[in-house]
Image 1: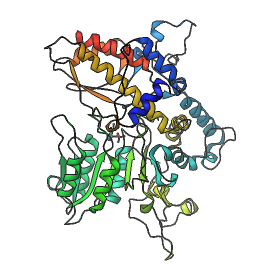
Image 2: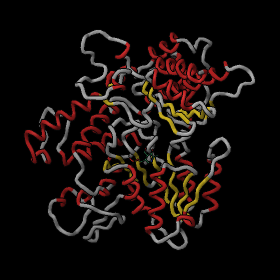
Image 3: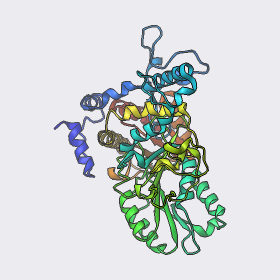
Image 4: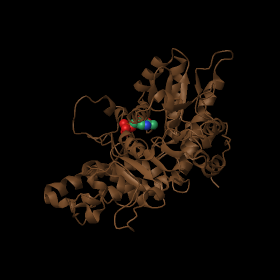
Amino acid sequence: MSDFASKAKVLRDGQKPEFPSNANTLEYAQSLDAQDKLRHFRDEFIIPTRASLKKKALDGIIPGAQTNGTITDADTPCIYFVGNSLGAQPKAVRRFLEAQLETWASIGVNGHFSSLSNSPLTSWQDMAADCAAKSAAIVGAADPSEVVIMNTLTVNLHFMLASFYRPTDKRHKIILEWRPFPSDWYAFQSQIEWHGLNPEKSMVEMQPDENLYLSTEKILATIDEHAEDAALLLLPGIQYYTGQLFDIPRITKYAQERGIVVGWDLAHCAGNVELQLHDWNVDFAVWCTYKYLNGGPGSMAGAFVHERHGKVDMSSGKPVFKPRLSGWYGADKSVRFNMDKEFQPTPGAQGFQVSNPSAIDLTSLAAALSVFNKTSMKDLRSKALVLTAYTEHLLDEIVRRQPEGEEPAFKIITPRDPLQRGTQLSLLLRDGLMDTVAAALEAHGVVCDKRKPNVIRVAPVPMYCRFEDVWKFIEIFEAAIRG
Ligand SMILES: Cc1ncc(COP(=O)(O)O)c(C=O)c1O
């Protein structure tokens, strides 16, 4: 078994792999890249270059496509460790968009129901379902009908809450975590108020320990405490700030056994970690597609509705289904264009669709998902486990090299257990370091995410990042913290 494969295996078992004494050499990083069977996927992406990042005006040059044939330092791809915020552009996006623009220009309105034979696209009517089919394995749906691609994440959260958060006098609380993404917080707050309730009485915030870790035990204890009055538990699969991955199946089962509906915000999980939403019996989930899924800025979002909630019973002659906020695109295709007044939803998650979706937006997402469909989440996760463990190892080496007695320049606040995190590592910097570190990273072409006052989030995503990038990042980062 190769060094790479044996490390992936150890990590999959939740253990820490051993790295050799030469792990901090460029040669070692390159040897891991050489063993990486997903390394060719990098060619499917456009990585901004050090020059392109400084661009101030359009010049028709796509980063990485040299104009004069010589590769200069400026053409060097940057270290793009920000796939947890906005994924890099898949080359397929341009191709798919060009096909879409030609389709629209050539056949106009007929594109709703026809597609051109050599196009990578379906008719516009079928594009959302096509993207759902391309997403099903990524989130572990039993069938594409459990997935709908529509709107954006927060909008989908509101639509799902409209169906799944049905507070009563007795059960009205939402269990959430200490630091939900602000948009989720606003959604919970406004939904509670929409029902005429008081957010202060209907929100249960779980606090982490002093290391910002929220243990499963604490979550289960909170569920027990609110077993009689909680209507819903909604957590992020991965906490955006610390990078902690929660035990989705265990928490879901425990809460459901106590009569609580369970939803997940998978913004930081989709395309990052393996998910089995159907088998885990999750009631519903929402995610965005611009981070790990690389669909483009503000690209259309996804929602999962477990098949048991998507049933449409026609036995009485009238459709009976889970209440929702409806629109004509949730109506079954067989009756959608009858333009009558009775809403008969498409069975499954797609019956939660509301409007005619943007075919242009779906095109970009279809292109991004087509790259995912050339591999599997299992393989991507295996690589991510090794990439992140390697990053962690080299970061720990930096701390070990610091002079004795000196306060460590940073602390990794993401769980050390590889199975309790995704790709991202969050680094809490010593007070006063943020500005110099941020400036040095930028000057050396490292793109990563800064959360003021003191946290940088580093995500070497497996689709297009290399071990060599990690090695270079460490060199730049270490020089930055040394000043
Ligand atoms: C965890 C989480 N939830 C919600 C959102 C909001 O997403 P949107 O603006 O697509 O609604 C984000 C955006 O980054 C996020 O990270």
